[in-house]
Image (cartoon, rainbow over all chains, first blue to last red; front, side):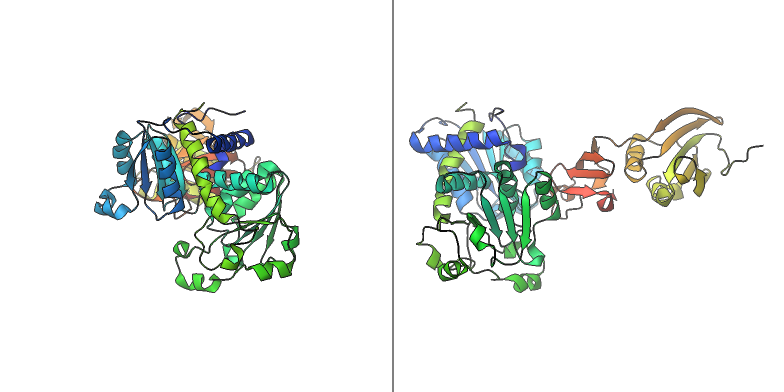
Length: 309
Length: 149
């Protein structure tokens, strides 16, 4: 059953059922087929980025403007009252009066839920610390659906920083609806959180934890590669131990033996975990994935603001 | 003649059927060191229900709902008796509430609830054994993770 998205907060992928995920993907597809230039005319999006972002922020802002809406906000909280010591709660109490919808990225986990509790306009979580990034998950699913032709029954390898990788947590929960088998490949210090694995197993997902792609690469339909996130490490020494531990390149993948229709996704930015030799191959869909941020975020904004029922 | 393990109190609260090992934690919750009237703490008393139990009697104090909620997380089998003039005027078992606000700290150091004076809020997703989900950051906590505020 699809519950109405109108005025709904988008905080965690765990709040959506399979039908609702598919509804947004269908709507995103519709956004690519038809122009909806003015459906958000007069609506104001507050784009509040307390943490750096390129793709998420720009694609939200682009999507809003393509639909006829207006964007206010900031990409650097250093120029806001936060720098004077204003709390997030107070910032939201003020800003909610200036807009029709809030998109929030913040370094603290649970910040989007806090904002949603305070604001009487809908809040979209654009990433809260290492917790959730639900709209990224919608566009990851959309990319998988478009490039693989299906999301059902795939074998997915998640590679890199699985401990702090919020995109991995969200995507694994979503793919659990589609009968995916999952391989979680990481150094021991960056393994998937135990409660994520426990939840996936309780939902009958076949989960495996590995330290290397060797031996499993032949089974994979999708590799979801992530960056080792330096900014999440409290101790730089711990970061140095795992820095550059995975470096995918074309020759290596072909030597390991992979399926001809393997697709490699990455939420980007990349640092050194994927060689540029991959970019020109049919395996690489990460730039297409980033572009998919526009139709997916157009779909979400339209649905939440009630422009499309 | 029946002999009481722990003396009766005239007025106050008796917390009975505490799992013996949790008795001192319950005493901490009740802040007994700051009580001015009589406080009796018994540990390893015989119990039909638990085998061994703890009991705490506090003279002159009626324990409040916040304290009852805290006790329920540490000693889910506990019962509370309110005493007036040596008579039990109210008796109830503690019960884990569905939502716990302001009494348990989220164990995730990066959770927003640990900043800016936000009142913690945890959803009880399982009562026995205790499993709590942070309303804000969605982390799941078990009994071992519980830190009372």
